[in-house]
Image (cartoon, rainbow, N blue to C red; front, side, top):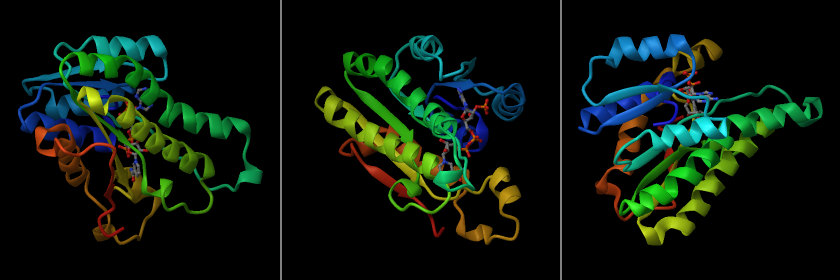
Length: 223
Ligand SMILES: NC(=O)c1ccc[n+]([C@@H]2O[C@H](COP(=O)([O-])OP(=O)(O)OC[C@H]3O[C@@H](n4cnc5c(N)ncnc54)[C@H](OP(=O)(O)O)[C@@H]3O)[C@@H](O)[C@H]2O)c1
């Protein structure tokens, strides 16, 4: 699992472990590793691995470190907003693409043949509702998440015949500490808990979703 720490990542790791799967989860920031270690460190089946997944060698090494690879979940990504296009630099666009799209590409190019050679598997990435319903002031983020969705749907048509299912989830606002800090006073009851999104990811990874590939799955809740 790429991005196995963070607000959503830790919830997905927990959900997959609860479902009896073995999980290799990557991390980058030491404090986040410590948090996941505290919450889930004793759990059987969990391996934590440091990897900067914008780096091609690290991404390939992360995929190749997993024996019996059956699924890849890539949650690496992030948001930047608050400025219109004329206020932005090229770097703002490149940062969003590097964080949201580049790891997905680097993981997929190594993982897809391995999953196919193993008889099939699942690949799940995170786009965003904004990719299909844009809002003002975050064009690099929105373009990057739209690219994530297009990339996953392109993988689907490339690999479906070899048994690898590729799906994207589209969250709106997840109920994370960072979002609560950024939006004090919002109606949090309309947001979606990380654990709820995690259950959808588990479904997309499991054989229960065997007929589903190429989907853009809304996980908006009431947001
Ligand atoms: N939160 C929302 O409301 C929301 C809405 C729509 C879409 N999403 C998407 O959902 C995903 C998870 O969101 P989140 O709120 O859980 O974000 P988060 O807490 O910032 O977590 C991001 C994850 O990406 C990892 N990461 C960042 N840069 C990396 C790199 N260069 N190499 C490897 N890993 C890296 C982080 O590792 P460390 O923790 O070790 O830094 C962390 O595991 C993201 O793709 C985000 O864009 C979130």
